[in-house]
Length: 631
Image 1 (cartoon, rainbow, N blue to C red):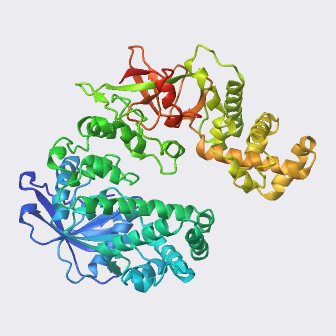
Image 2 (tube, rainbow, N blue to C red):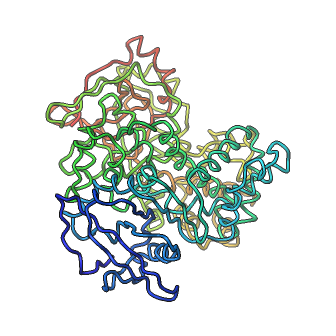
Image 3 (tube, rainbow, N blue to C red):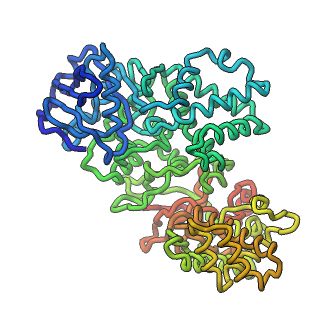
């Protein structure tokens, strides 16, 4: 974004800010604004704008203090809408009122944001409207019992489905997922939402979104309501038909509503006292920030002063150092492992410790790693990870599970090199099969847990698929067992035409005729019947597509005890799998030459994910505890 050249240096000692007046012009004219500088302490009655910046490459021109300035198109549209308000008065808008090219000024102004929004009337610009969002806003202004007279009868269910379908476009507006917008809403003296030409209150939005969520949560045990919603989404959102048909559109709605409701719940709980940084960061998990440092700086206006003093606003610092500052200064030691359940570890460490989390990379709520462990209780007791005096070493007690004996990684971008993709999947598959068929060294304590090996077969671990998904491709479970599926996929991976089949499946231009030609030319000799050959092609297609979405970049490994597992981080032979006390998941630690460890991150080992099956082995002394120092 180009800045206009007339910024005058602010007097930081006076807590100066700039306020904007939008001049009243015809709609056809360029938006024109004038600024004035004043002390925040002298401001009596002013407004502030909350909005999402939008694509920085899509811009429009405005006039500020007689100079041309380039702003994002979404901001320009908000300014045009605000210009129509006859009694708007002065307004504070971050992109214009802060010199975005001056880090020193940003460092000064960002801590003032909490005071700016708490002293102002906030206009929230969601963006332009459409027929669906217009109708949903009209419904929001009605009493709920008038809009949905009786949700228990079939007509009521259909009306709920209709209203949820109407709400999609409004709820999916980018404003709801941004990090900065949380404190702008949370701190505001008064709030007016704007969507196109319509306005509505925060209380209307909170009440309706919570109400719709509760109807699904409490009254849809048999998924009848979801089926109504699905039918409505397909018919009403033709522009999003692919997402609607696969239920992804409804999944996106559920995820966004969850993000919105978390803020409302914290607002209700902390009416009189500011929430801690830990609370607001958990509250904003999944929200986005253009600058990764703003995952922290964008929330500082909400937290208590004693925490605020320990996190300096410095846009000259690298994001990893900002996150390190949070973990070492604010995050209580006994909550450390809880944090790992919400965020992944940093990939680019530089000189910060390996145990620092990356607050810009949350785990998705449907992520395999989280779903597999979400039902676990804390292992053994409350954990108490301790930081060293210089905050470089994290020490904790953990139960040793096993050691990595062999590791293989599936590279990313399989469509660029299908041959390599097939080769890597084949290597992992063969390694897993061999591990399950090879007798375990009786000296390894985990040989006593051999009965847990068969929880998941190699094809299930590698692809994340399950036997129930066979029904989608016409394979009846009573005809093809999971073991037979495993053997069939291993044979297909070893066929001379496996790479060619992979290229065809991953091609965006694959047609049914292409598949028919391939099946008859390559597969008919082995499978004899066209129907059986097609079935095996469909098996391989399901497997490959699941591997593409879930397995690329993942390290798969075999432990000394013969267990198979995987991790999103790079794993190597000798890495140790442990369960820290107080944790609900196992971790991989990499031994270092100085006797300490480097943290690799969360791992899943097939058969060793449920604590109820391991606790007895811990009591019997098969699984033993040790103290680990991680740097």
